[in-house]
Length: 245
Ligand SMILES: NC(=O)c1ccc[n+]([C@@H]2O[C@H](COP(=O)([O-])OP(=O)(O)OC[C@H]3O[C@@H](n4cnc5c(N)ncnc54)[C@H](OP(=O)(O)O)[C@@H]3O)[C@@H](O)[C@H]2O)c1
Image (cartoon, rainbow, N blue to C red; front, side, top):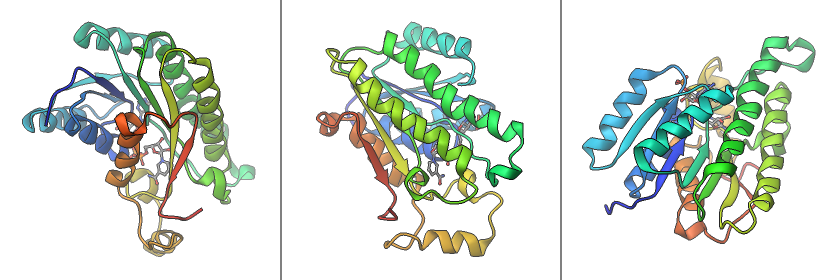
């Protein structure tokens, strides 16, 4: 492993896909900032694991839905490492219900974290990311699949895909790419919690590879877009789902 001076900020990196992304980018030689909302112990453990493996990591608590928290997080990152090169907008929540049964909390919380949270970090990054940087946003393959009960969640992620394309153009001249990765069903708490074993089995067979994605599968796609091999990919949505759609 060779250390580089590149610094990556991964939101929602205490658990699940974000933790796998942080681990992968650290093993690719980047310094990683592990953002979390409430899971301080998991975030600290991940940072310790990365450091033990020879990497460099810092944890920062911030609620992505609060723009003041985001500004403070960028301040802390810049104070520690001089700047940020890679932003991975991974923090997200999912609450499923038919629209008729969706209460205001289901709607407002997903808009606040998945959409406004992404806007908050993208706005800060478009002002402060170092030239030559990379932004990767997490969407979902449900934007294409359009499954019942996913309407509000998918709507927040469709908006993230729209932001991806537009910001890639607004950053013209700074050699910063902006892309999205749209996973299919991936084995994390967000997908597994509240589902019966039968439903999990059925959804894991929706793709021709007949398994759930792993957080590492998604981290590989993010690492490609965040690394040198992804340099020519810009403004795109990569559906990492085993061929489900
Ligand atoms: N799993 C899937 O099947 C799947 C499929 C498609 C897309 N995705 C997307 O992939 C991303 C990661 O999902 P996951 O499955 O890894 O979810 P997860 O296991 O539930 O982890 C969610 C992460 O987001 C953080 N988070 C939640 N609210 C936050 C907030 N307000 N501010 C900062 N961090 C916050 C959590 O931090 P704390 O631990 O501190 O709460 C946690 O680290 C999400 O954007 C999700 O929509 C997932």
